[in-house]
Length: 154
Image (cartoon, rainbow, N blue to C red; front, side, top):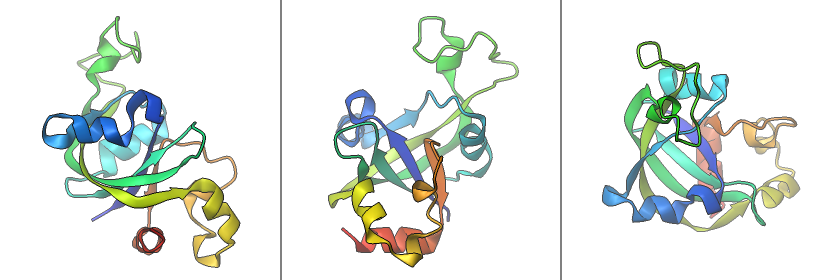
């Protein structure tokens, strides 16, 4: 099993949106970064555990847990000229962008804020991708050690 952190802006698609979806499941579309795309296409597997992270908001942080329920497949929004994430260079016969389906599992007992994680100055978090300078990826892999440590903070 792999562990991940996936970021989304809560006013665009937050954890409450996911929880309200039929079967509490939705595709994670609109990723337009090749490194993140590669992780969804090649590395994310059914059953992988994922932290839902609210970004670009008053208090960015980890707010919940979800699970990958469908492995990478072409992101159909790239083919739709009316879609926000349309990419005219993406071709259904040779897709450029991929997505996975995720399912809501639960809210955390509390928001584990980015500020709190930075202020902890915990050596066990030193190599956490979220805390690396310049890391702006919307999807990042976590180790089991990081997963367990972050869960222990709730």
